[in-house]
Length: 130
Image (tube, rainbow, N blue to C red; front, side, top):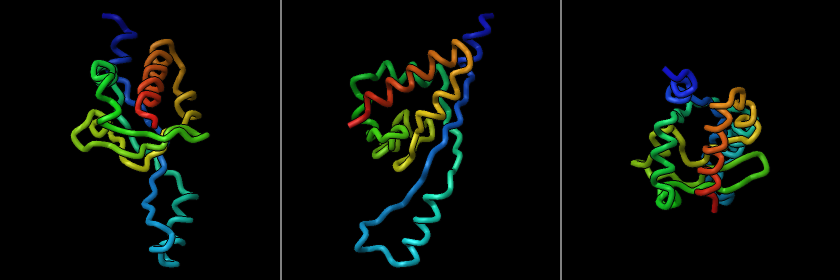
């Protein structure tokens, strides 16, 4: 059994994601503004399942990826701006508003297998970036 392949196949990635539910400023009450300000201070950690198998399926659908999800590049990473509910991105646990940080992806690069998988995930995120 190839140990590296086993690790890649069961790899579960925990990404630091930020969730916000924004309304246009004109529609926000003072209480909603206070809640949003508190959310900005709080990090939520969500478990995102990015297995070797799921990443391969995303890569297989390379040309369709921008139709399944969209992201906006920010200085800290990729803000997920759109996720089709029936997409591989939704299966992985990504939601609109999530922020996948570059810093956290870099911390996950602890073995050759994980380095390769994280580089592939970064390429996928770049593919869906608008």
